[in-house]
Every structure is written in C-alpha cells, then in structure tokens.
Picture (tube, one colour):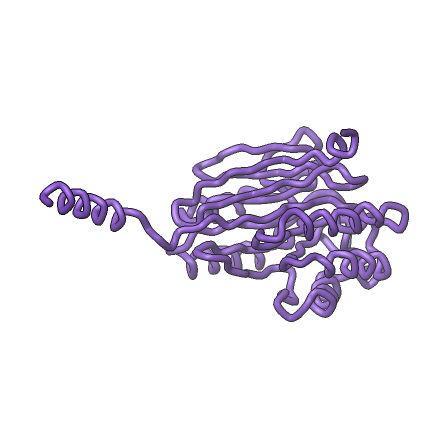
Length: 265
C-alpha cells in the first residue's frame, strides 16, 4: 500500500511538471514554385500528394515566387490549384510575383489570394496568424516599382514588425518571408539594409525562426538563438520541407523532401 501511494505521488509530480497542452505544429514549406502554364501540372500533382500524405498537418505555406512572372492569369492559375489542398494554405509574395507596371501590386495579389483561398486568409502582404501557442508573422519585402532580386523591407514594415513582436512578447514567433536574412555570395540576391531588420530581432527574444526561400538552395543556420530556415526551390517538381515545431519549448525539426529522387524511385 505504501509503495502504491509513493508511486502515485511520484506520478503526480511528473504529470504536473509536463505541460499537457504542448503540441507539435506541423506544416509544409514550399517556396519558389515559379509556376507557368508549362509546369502547372507539377503543382497539381503536389496538391494531390499533400491531400493523400499529410491530412493531419496544420497548414501549408508558400513563401514567394509562386509564379514565374507577375501576371494576373498566372496568379489565378496558382491560386486555383492550391485552393484544392485540404489544409489551410498561407501565401507570401516574392520578387517574381509583383510588378506595378502590370498592375500586380501587393494589395491586388493578397486581395485576390483571399478571394480565391477563403476569408481565413488575410488580405495584406504583412499579416499574422496563430497556431497553438505559436504566432506566425508573414512579411513582404518586395520592391513593386523597380523590380529586382534584392529584398527590401521598408521602414514602415520594420516598425510594424517591431510592434507585433512587442504585442506578442509572451509568445514564440515564427517569421515567414521570401527573402532570407542569411548572407549570400550573390550580390543580386541579397537583402538591402538588413541591419535594421536584425536590430529588431535582437531587440526581442521571442522569435524562434525565420522561414524563407529565394536562394534556390537548402540552408539552415542559427544566429543569436534564431533558427534561419531556407528551403530549396520547388520549381520543376524538386523540393519542399516538412517543419515541426513544439509550441511549448520551441524545438524545431525539419525534413527536406527531394521529390526528384522519389520520382526516380
């Protein structure tokens, strides 16, 4: 009897020490689809793959260069394919997606995204959504007037980010965007004045990851306790990444999936 009481008491202590509400937030990261009419069938096949293999995931995120050129018809093609995914889908913009001279502004792009995907999706390029105890912040960073591969987060965007990180200071935050903050050897693919961005990240201690694409390669580095996750391009049916984050301790696990090797098998 004494042993049973001692066992139950020990079990109770262990149970109290474990947060029962902690869970893993699982999502699929896809970037640089560069959709055209010629390669759209790959995205359709991938939509079926997601629906067949990842029904229990929380969401899918596409982080920019979703279409190869800033064209309204191509945007509609992209959105009408991914709307068939049986999970919530979130979209950020990349440098290939926007061009003011073609009336492909961030406002139009995101309003169209909301119209086709559903009212759950925000209609602005900088937005927030929550999953479990995690806060996800989507950032723009695209130059609409003078297009180019260099990212540029305007002062207004940096100020907005700072305010959101202050607002959610007691939450773990994951930032989703097209342009990585990591250095690159390519002068034509870097980030303009990224010091101001890092200043905001260093001011706060709640950002656990920045998830991005753009570089067309796979990189993961930790800088000042922030995990920078860059996923290889999807275009022509090649790569995507599975990301799992514990919403209590912030532990992050990633798996890069090489679709070309799967197809070869």
